[in-house]
Length: 132
Image (cartoon, rainbow, N blue to C red; front, side, top):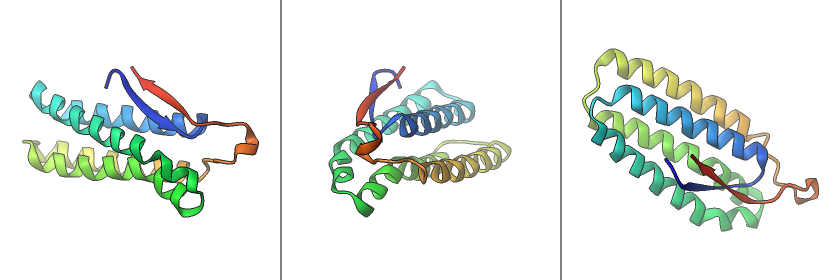
């Protein structure tokens, strides 16, 4: 996912999201036999990140809007991976292994996101992260 900019609230959010997306890429790379399958999913990830970036305005509204935006990208990517695994040819062992890893990753990510602070008084600001 070279040259993809991800809008993040602060450094904590950046770390969580970048780690999550890097792990997702590794999982997909491991289960895809054909390079074009991986490329197709990389394009899906790009679109999901772009959608999240477009929705960043909701995070400025505060309250549940902020929480919804912060959680949106990982949850959307999670469901995209689950759907994608059903579209490509994956052997049962890889499907089970990847599903277990994916479920663990999304659980950890969502728990970590609970601690993301968007309080401007802390000095953190919104910025872009380039995933290279």
